[in-house]
Amino acid sequence: MHPISSQRFNNMEKFILRFILLFRGMWESLGVNYTQFKVILETKVTLENRKPITFKKRNTGKSSSSTSVIQFILYMIIGLMFMVILILIPDRYLALAIMLLCFTSMLSITLVSDFSPILLDTRDQYIIIPKPVNDRTIALSRITFIAIKLFNQVIALCLPALLYVLFNWDIMAILLLALQLLLSTLIALVFVNGFYLISIKYLPIQKFKDIITYIQIGLSLIIFLSYYLGPNLIQTIVDSHLTIEQLKFLWIFPSTWIASLQSLLLGNHSLQIMLFSLLGIVVPFFGLYACTQIFSRGFNAKIAALAGADTPLPETTKTISQSMTKRPFYKKLVARVCSSPLEEAGFSIVWLITSKTREFKQQLYPSLAYLPIYFIFLFLRTGEGLPMVEKLVKLRESGLYIIMFYLSLLTILTVFQLITQSNRYKAAWIYYVTPIDRPGKFMTGVLKACLIKYVLPFNILFLCICIPLFGISSINDLLLSSAVGGIESILIMLFLVKNYPFSKASQSSSKALVNLFILGLLGLLGYLHKVIFQYELLIWGLAGLAWLLFFIMLKYLQKDNWKSLAFDDN
Image (cartoon, rainbow, N blue to C red):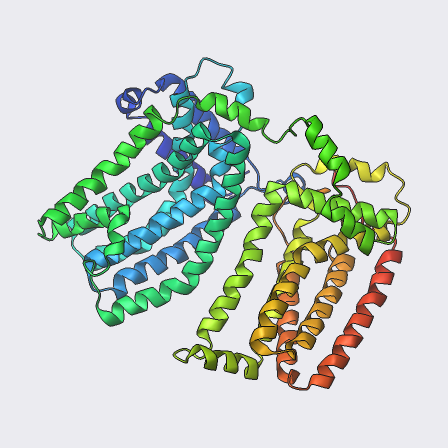
């Protein structure tokens, strides 16, 4: 039996569906077969409400109600941040323009990260596409279903701002704000889905899937940058009493056009405000028309091709001859760092699969890209207002640059949490029919591949940066932190990694306390290192001891019987 909270979320989606289906004439004018459109949407909503959460669902039989409630609360907190913008910035037009820009950006990021699989779902090719259903009906049914699923998030993000406006502005302002939020939601839907439809129409399928991967990575970086830049930008606007006329770069964003409706309500009938207001109303609906009438043509065929886009391309005679004459880079590494065929197998499997799996890249690469940004902000925030030379001196004398070494070790935790998971984990049966008599050696190869591929490049980068900026004395600091990272990796392998590489179904992690403990321990070690970094001989001695301990533990890892390794047969 589903909890009451889950029923409320499901009933809300059904209510929205019934409301949407009232506008039959509008859907038919867009070229949609209304009867098919209704059946597709009702089926999708029904199936989605029956879908369990991924984590241990088969064993517990629990619904996703708690997850929905937690997500609603988290989005409500973000909505409170949007409300703060309205409170801090006295200029109503500018405050709304920035708030709606944040709102639209948040929805766009959510659409790309969470709802892309709905628009690009290839399962329809087995049921819907073989039937006489036109491209517009399928494309628009997917966009509409995304809008229904997005509605709960929209409510959570909007509610704080609507309550603030209700008690501080007049009744017409809150009604207009509700309209502006709906238009902003439509802008986000049209922008993201329109981009996908245009890309899938004009780009090769393989290149399209690669682009989606890197867009998701880029959006993750935008979120991270916004976390640092947003408060400073708002503080600057408040302190300098800036207006929308002074921030002309905001004029290009649809959020500014939609926000101008409030200025129109307050009696500002200038040509600029009237033009922006017209754009704010026309552009969302024109985008919807373009998505359904122009860019949706051939959508069914592209979705069918998308399902087979990951099949390997046939090798030509030229490609085969090149591969036989040119030795791959990872093969050269294997020959140098692995001491047995089992180690070579573990190293090669991890190196090759992580290079070709999009899901793995989407989850890992954002955390890797955060590190250079951390370094930039650490540099900018150290000695604010000081010349660059004095900033470098302060970083060197305080040892703050050591923090970057330990921040890079956080990637190890992320790598080993992801390295065992895969959407195609059933293929892991191969591990259990091959004669792996010493699994410790195999997992040692896995460890070496992860360290060389995802940790060593950052150490080389930091070495190239720190020696010119902070001197040769930074080498021993890097050696000590690298040894700590190696020891951390072995401990994680021994106590947290319970599966062969890519042998477990992708699922939510339940190791939050363990992760916090590891992060806290790394933070403590980084702080202790910073305290003693001026004692050069002590750092060299500790680095030598740490590396000795790492190699001893590596030998133990090779000999471990790994009884915990198990095949996930869910």
